[in-house]
Length: 230
Image (cartoon, rainbow, N blue to C red; front, side, top):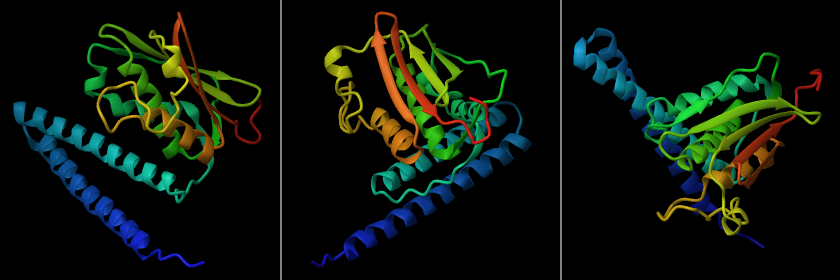
């Protein structure tokens, strides 16, 4: 049997070109924002700093979309290395600095006292953490808070993200399905599904959740690095 893959290859080339070009454009925007912030004064410097922050957020979102498309197609390349889980969380939380989803909501997290070394690829791992936190923030009413905690288990190191909401049973049964969403707008439903895709299929971890009257907890567990005491 033969299959013509020319259209598929052409689409992949176009995708790579698109992401390359748009990242270059955003990089230029961020660069000019940094220049204005450095040499500007007053309101112009404040506006430049905002431009720089938004350009950084846009860059991360573009990279996340690129990685998701590669992961869906089975061509995402991962590179495992010893990484502190605390550092992954810290980098992921920078996404929410000045983000609309954090308006009137707090993110509570304290770095661990001991080592949290895991063997993983920090990029996809950060994508999982970002989606966990964003999902929790969207389920949190104004004035509420999202709580993050790390715990060492015999199998590895486990991150838990808590919010006060409870997920109804019919929703909970479909939470990790690709196109399912609790939101009315179309184009949703990839957040929780991508947690599973990145966290389990590519990183070999475990992503799960439980919900009840005391709130909802999403968890992400990764194995400790070889040589680390469990």
